[in-house]
Length: 141
Image 1 (cartoon, helix red, strand yellow):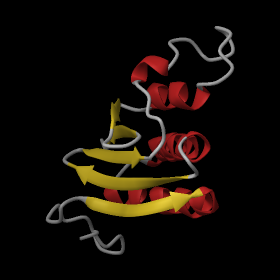
Image 2 (cartoon, rainbow, N blue to C red):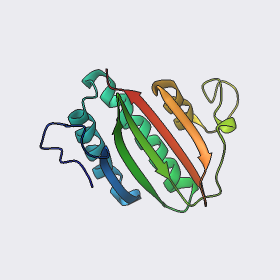
Image 3 (cartoon, rainbow, N blue to C red):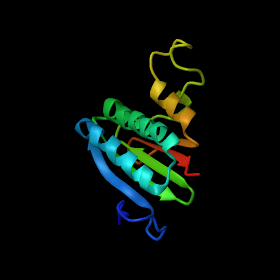
């Protein structure tokens, strides 16, 4: 069951704020929904833009590298806002995330993952049953 963003967060639900499949056409609405739910969950305004940008980067990667679609689950878990994006692509590991800003090290890609790791308090990449599962989180306070 999704929490109702029009009501104060009560911590009684399973923390689900947004749970939906997406394609490229859905990205603009997805950004709006993630920002709205992040505000409602209590993510500080100063960090909200970074969170939305990181989610957008991972969702865009799912579209570009994993068959044009993905699934997003946004939850409030304790004192964190957590977003998990899964896809049905070839999968990858966090070893592909460069240590240095891509371009400076000669890498032609990887900026979205690098940026996501930079702004997130927690980032995990794992293999799903098919494809990749990327989870990023930010502390609420």
